[in-house]
Length: 150
Image (cartoon, rainbow, N blue to C red; front, side):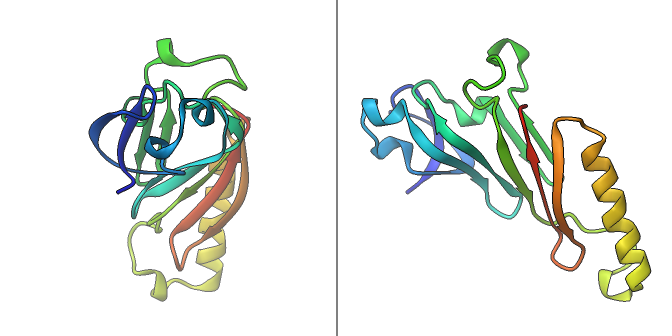
């Protein structure tokens, strides 16, 4: 079972809706210091892939990541936030699910309305200078962007 927040050397477990890949509990203390392409998933909501190597020795997913429909926050408690490039405060790709346009069913929207909504999502993403829009699909509700840091 890959579910559960992980803290310390992968031994602590708190009830958590997250799936973490690789399974940090199966890694040695040495392996925890250099986890490649760490992925944190909240099923049916979204996922974050932290690029490069991440030291997961003291990672507490339930404490450090908030992932809701259309919303991601890493280090909600600023006192836990390391400098840019350290911990989870680094380059990552965020994929959000179920981000559908409000109102009418998507199948009833014109191609022009769909494009307008995609452009709105692009503008909203890029208003944050640390974010780069990758894609948004109105039909599937999948919104993907990259961040340089959190």
